[in-house]
Image 1 (cartoon, rainbow, N blue to C red):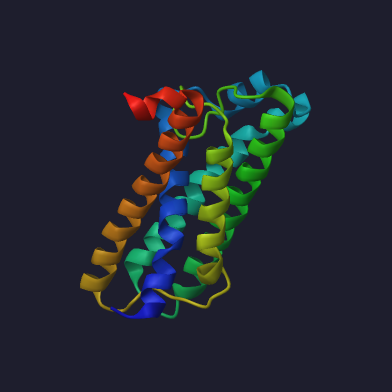
Image 2: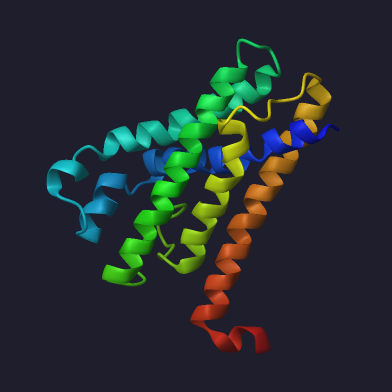
Length: 184
């Protein structure tokens, strides 16, 4: 496996989590507008535009993953970079929003990946890590590998990294909320 392909694969976890979050909210709810309304941080006219943010989440995830599957074809390299750039921007924006939400409202439901998750420093850190991971691909410094087998292996690795990032953030939240958890 080449290093450039591995570097490009770092954009996948953040993109796939955006796609998952948007799809989950669409299918199971609550919709993003309802979550943002409950936070009482944004003006109502901006909350009404949340559907566009959900669409951007889904589109960034789908475009990044689709361009990844297309490989190193020169036609898709800029598409992959654009998807990674939107992924990085959305993840960074969500991380920043979570920081403000934590400071103003505390640990309230954030609506990030499920309907029971609470805003936390670990959630904000997760968003920042995923944003930074997508930057090399966003800058065009890394493109998906040409060989399908390598892309498939790196895609599986990207899914695994995304799951690990989510689980670690949840474990940190659990230990912080119940310090005796480690002793149990």
